Length: 404
View 1 (tube, one colour):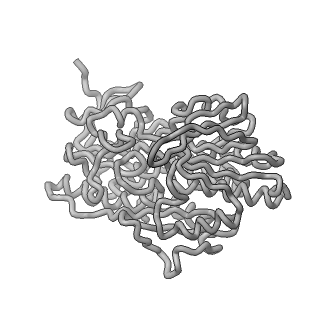
View 2 (cartoon, one colour):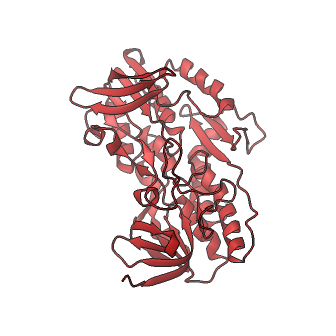
View 3 (cartoon, rainbow, N blue to C red):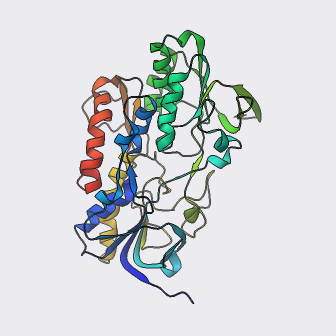
């Protein structure tokens, strides 16, 4: 028989943007010792800047800080990995420590980068022109490979699965193209964007602007191309190309290949009773899209990348989700119905050059929700400076402290 060795009132799984933001807000309302965070990593990363690391704009070290600096005072940090969720028993199992009993559970574990889903990708990564900004070390390698590139085919991919920051695959493509132009090798370079989706951007209002960027940069955009294998020895990428009638495979040779891996919720979420079972990619932590509360277990909430919320997986979305989740969790703790509502707000600062950003902000309905009294469908230098300097300050200084 299992002996419970830990007990907390609120258990937060994940010490990334969502988990820390929720913990910071809750810590001002609950007594010390009532909240615990399960998070194995000793480092915390500001991943939105990895695009600029891959473009040589910022050093990778600027995106990493000690996790300990952001664990709120009075919150217990359990440095372990979750192995199983047992919501019927109000219990979480960890890999190396005791099980943890809770009264309320908040899931914010982030996403799993599923490199192995594409045969040949893991072994090819970081060698012979294959790179990705979706990893701390590989982001720097991406810049080194872009610098070393001397012409040929530069191929950029994006899976059809939900991913962290759906704009990032095209951001690094635009910045790499700009580098090729600056280096005087653009005429010797064929830039291809082979993306799994049907269009360059999921929200229609911003699509015309980005289609103009593709045309301006003379990028060969190929939609409905799903990367299914990497043949590193031959320097070829294999894609499944879909149409309404059929699908078939094509091979595209490359000299530089930037890959965005398929992504999914962590295994312990996907295999749990808390996971969704429908949709093209099941396994997300199932919650009401407005209250962020599980429909099956009333003491469980989720936010961020691993949740079933039908919006873009961005830090900006988490910033709006966290206060809603905390308000509704506190309401449930006080035997009240959750009334705070999340409208699906997300933001994607699409970097189109080293001087311009298209600040795409939108809600569940795909309606633009600009934070500034400016036309949100235009590329702007001011939004680049916000992306480069303002948003990192907001993240480290305010959002993770529960103040924004």
